[in-house]
Image (tube, rainbow, N blue to C red; front, side):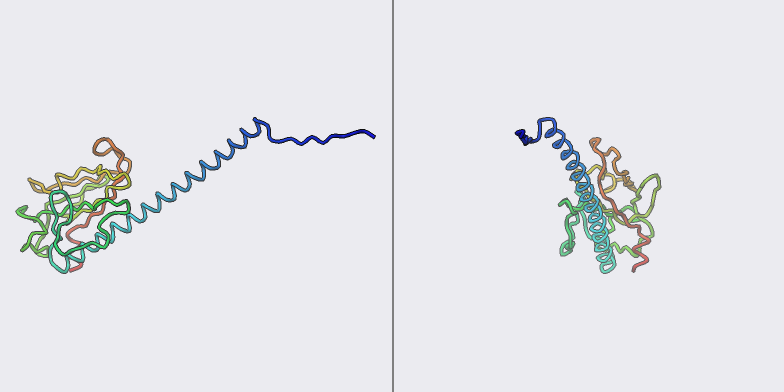
Length: 196
């Protein structure tokens, strides 16, 4: 009777390298899908949050007949007015740009300036090649990178009337040549008038 030996073999070095390579491809695919879903979820949350903030500002404006006060750093400074979400989903403070009056003599948040008596504003928004006039206010989230690529100074406190705010397309080179990821929402004066 012949003696047969059974050889037990493990993985060789090449086989182990192939298995690790396949696992690496699978893991990198899963991670990229997961990251993509997280980014989409955050973008949806940002849109929901900016629209909620916009509606809170409109509500304040309807009740008080003027916009909430802001400052030259594009922050809401209205005493006693607290947003339910003072920051965007990434923890950045909302940037708020209020329009100037139709005569450019004051801001739509100044005491004694009633928004329902204004027929136009000193703020326009150019977005994707189209310019919208008589914008009451603009809200901006600096986005996931926390950097404000959109240039604000001319719209915050225009020295000449009207001021123009330009909305950059996502991914467009913004301030410092950083790809834009800002989330922007703006409301025209006529929309607020229709709610009053």
